[in-house]
Image (cartoon, rainbow, N blue to C red):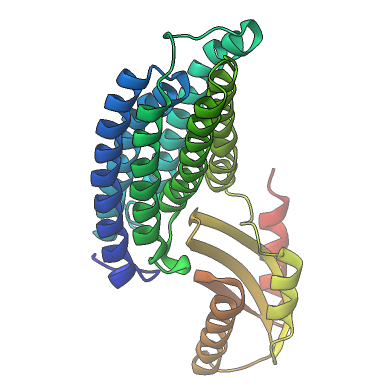
Amino acid sequence: MGDQPHGEGEGSRLIERGLVVALLLSAAVLVVEGVGAFLSRSLALTVDAVHNVPDLLAFAVSYVSVVAIAKGGTDAHTFGSHRLEVFAAILNAFIILAAGVLFAYPAAVGLVRGELTFGSIDPTFLLLAALPTLVLRGAAAFVLGRVPRAARELNVRSVMIHLGTDLVIAAALIGDAVVITFAPTNLRVDSFAALVVSAILVYESVPIFRASWEVLTEGVPRGISLAELTDAIRSTPRVKEVHDVHVWAVCPTFVCMTAHLRIEEMSVTESAALTERIRADVERRFGVVHSVFECEPLEESAPSAAMRRALTEVP
């Protein structure tokens, strides 16, 4: 069962290549910032350098999950490994959050006391590390940005959010170096920059946690109105009633639904054509890529109605 139900194909290959590039560029950033942090003695650069270590793990986990998803469904996992991307995203978010919380305290202490954590700061080495970091992260964001939006799964979007905030962090480090260059007696600026970096890391984890939670709790995906979806199906000619509608996501790009339809009297061939038309419409308008519809006659026979009532009244 190697089906790829929501367009992994070329998009998946672009994602895989993009994640490999992001992984390699992040390794380069780790080296650059690690050396820069040691030579500059900047707490802000140290925070960002350390947070590159979990970055590497996060990108690696994202890559592994994308490769697993691309293999499609199996007899044991008929939907494939799509939920792996959700767990990869949660791991990414935990790593980001932990890095932010870990360094928030020393940054806050340094800001309040006006003390330098590692001694006097050399802004030259700080700038020499921050500038290539900005370039390397920009390159990684550009490569992943080429992946079509529709093909970006949750863990890939978490990486994109991660890279976006990392660019902001690199810009903050450059600002830190510039201020220290022109105001070397300002002992709080580096601690302030470190606190900003920590706050950004904490903040960027929130939307990833939220999106993951919505998938795992099988909530109606954001951007889909259940009322509008139901009305769209009901407005289809020869459909008289829609009920027992369920919409959920295996992962954010793999939205599923089931529904019961009360339809006019028609042949099996006609009902199959009707449901196929509805299926194509909900995919085009609402992004539902896997849908199952059970057709029921508009007028039930007495035995059928009695059977249905009996089943619904069973405690």
